[in-house]
Image (cartoon, rainbow, N blue to C red; front, side, top):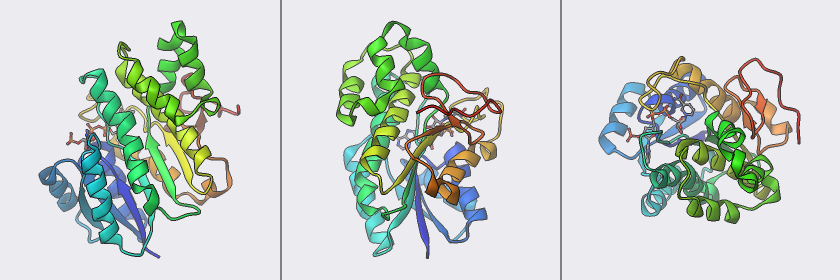
Length: 268
Ligand code: NAP
């Protein structure tokens, strides 16, 4: 059966490479390539050059845009459920805290909520693109904020509502990007707990040379590997979900950096 996969922020960078890899390697997948710009999205669809890619216009920063996109997708896929979502859209260090949190954290949450009802259950998959900046924020920036550190290090003791409160309340965090990605990882754990019929995980793609990280040391093709693995590998049907993975596809802790090749995180 056809597997529809939505990839957000997919007009360039890692998102576009994820779409390309899905089209190249999974003939059953039809990619819904989401872009906030129609023109940039059309250009990406043209580059990928496959009849298994369709454009979805969606600005993850806007409730209205995300709801309209979900209703467009519902019409496009008809009675076929969505197989998966890759929440990839993101912004980096050159944006204000409020915008970084709105796009990286609330954007992920908005998309999960609007598209959640379209996903196949059981077994539908959600992959949230976080970053090593998340665990590094928890280990470093949270040093003087033990309650925040606990929330991010042990998210299952809290709730999604609590994360939303924190995201609105913490208005003076300097490391906006790391904060937003720690929120994404905690949200992933809580969403997985709330949705035991779905397979929900997060990962870092690695340090990838893109407009967001011009000094990145690896290629977008490398950055697409772990997100696609979390989305497609049957092995994830049989292991607990709500976990965070390193760019080498190995489970990693939420509260400290684990480098590629380091031993897997085995904690709770
Ligand atoms: P990128 O090349 O700058 O791509 C970011 C994508 O997100 C673009 O398509 C951008 O669209 C889209 N986007 C931004 N704001 C959006 C919004 N409000 N609504 C919809 N789309 C939006 O960066 P990238 O490196 O590929 O980043 C992809 C993801 O990987 C991000 O979540 C990033 O945090 C994460 N990540 C990257 C690295 C790295 O080293 N590159 C490391 C760790 C994590 P426009 O073209 O319209 O701006």
